[in-house]
Structure formats: structure tokens, C-alpha cells
Length: 404
Image 1: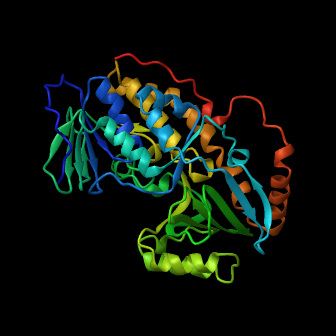
Image 2: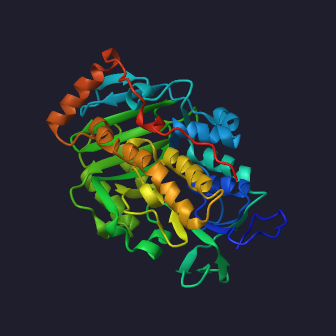
């Protein structure tokens, strides 16, 4: 078990010892704010270190205010990718339209951030590593709330007690399972599966995305810079969730190969690269909907509580905003009142952003020939359609000030 705990631990007042499960985005952001409010924070992460690399993610709207208040906005500006072009291709590989990405996402040039996921996690970790205890290569095994504390056993380390446990451990959250039950009860499948992996950039792509579509299938190449590699993405409509392939990487590759058999453009080369790639990530496109985000002394944040799916482009932003709101709600309250305030003040923002998924699927992944034709016509006319007024979903929460 490796640790990042160089700062001496001081005696902490009763009720202020917190365990966070997960060290991706929501976990370190939550640790940052809780540490500021006087909590002694431990973060447990099943990976052996902070995960670098990964596909590009967006930070926009209210989440920009969060990272500004954290003092990390300048570093993220330096890491900004600045994709300049998004090109849609028809089934025969011909160009439908080429646009600036913000025309499709509703983003704002010069304001919104797009960074490699690993760059964001590196910046978040650097902001907290000297003040927070990290337990890598470990995870929560059991939680017991029968007493005045939460007794935790770990898969590798010894048992410990905490005043609160906060689950920031993703869509397939172990913490959520322990307090609320199996994932199937909260998992809302949106009808698609996808795979993402890296491959050699033999396409002369630079700071751009190219997306090919046929009904129910999409293939995209993301070039985040002038690097040797691109991110390859394959998405397909699947009426029934294929439970049998999730634990079998070979079955995942076989399923994707069968779905994309006969596809044109660069898809055959992408399938060949997928066979040899060592970083293939496969999952269903889904959301998490919970009746309540906490139980007893345990609460959930980010994808563990309210995954919106990548169709919204808001997963990372919700994680950052949710972490800020949860920590702030606990700044001067006990766990029960804090959890209630967190949910009361954040749920509407989450619901509005989860609702973006329908718009995302219609734009990126039409499932019939008619829907694809209609989508392409909308894209061709996009430049002449004025941006709708009102506050966009990603800015639908005015960030409050919290005082410890």
C-alpha cells in the first residue's frame, strides 16, 4: 500500500474524520474543500496511483467557478486542448459538415475548458497531496454503521473508523452498493454501448475530431494535439444491455467487431487497432438515478450519485460542482443536516444536466436512416440558427459562498 501523507496529522475535533472512496475527479476535489473546512481526510483508491492519460473532458459553466475558487484555473488554462474542428461524415465517408465544436456542444469559446482527463486529475492531486492522506492500491470492503462511527474494513489494509464515508467511486460504485444495494436498481440504460482506446495517428489529424455515422453506429477519431496517438471511439445502439460481455474483454471486442462488420471509412483499421490495444475501455451509456444520495453517515457524489453519461458532456463538471456543494454543506453542519442541504441545493442542477442526454443522442448517434438524414440537415443549418437565450444547463446553479 502506497501513501501520500507527508504532512503530519494533527488532532482533529470529534466528527471531522472523513474517508473518501475514489481519487479521480470528485474525490480529490471533495478532499480539497473538506480539508479547507478543517476535516482530516483520507482518500482510498483501488488503482496503484493517480491515473494519467485518458480522453478529453469538458469543464464549463458553474464548474469553471469551482476550479477558479480552488486556484487551479490557470494551470488548467495551460492544459486546454482547444479543439478547432468537428467534422461529421456520412455512411459513405463523404463530408456532411465541418463546424467549430462549440456550435454543437453549446460551449463558449475562450471560457470553457477541454483538457485531457489525466491533466485534470494531476492538477487536482497536486492541490491536495500534501494535506490529505492517500491510500492507493486498496478499496473499501465493508461498512458498518451500527455504532456512532462508520467502521470500515479494507481489502488490503487494516480496519479503521471514520465519522463519515463519502463515495466518489464512479458509475459502478462499491460504496453505493454497500449502502443502497445493487446497481441494477439505480442504473438507467440509455440504449448504447461504447469502447474507447488509443491508436496511432496515421490520419494527419491535429486538434480536431472526425465522426462517421451510419444508422445506429458511430466511429470517431479525436486528435487532441499533434501527438503520435489519437483517441478512437466506437459507439453503437444496443436495445438490450449485454451483461454477458462486461467481464470478458475478448467478448467485448468480438461484439464490437460483429456490430461494425462491413462499415466503411477508417473503421476496419480502428477494429484492427482495437484488437491489439491495451487500453480498451468498454461500457454502457447510462445514468444513475437515486431516490436519495446518502444513508446514515455515508453520502455519494459525482457519478456514484448522479452519472449523467457522456452524452451530456457534463460528467466532470457535475463531479466538481457536486464536490464543492457537498463539502460546503458540511462546513458548519453535522452530517445529517449537511447531507440534507447538499441534496436540497444540488439536485435540481443535476436533474437539468441529466436531461441533456436526449439532445446528445439525437445529435451524435441517430439510430435510423431517417433520423440520420434529419440530423445531417440540422447540422448543415446549424451556423444559421441563433443560440437559444436563457441560462444554459451547465450554468444553472449560482454557486454559493460557504464559511467554515
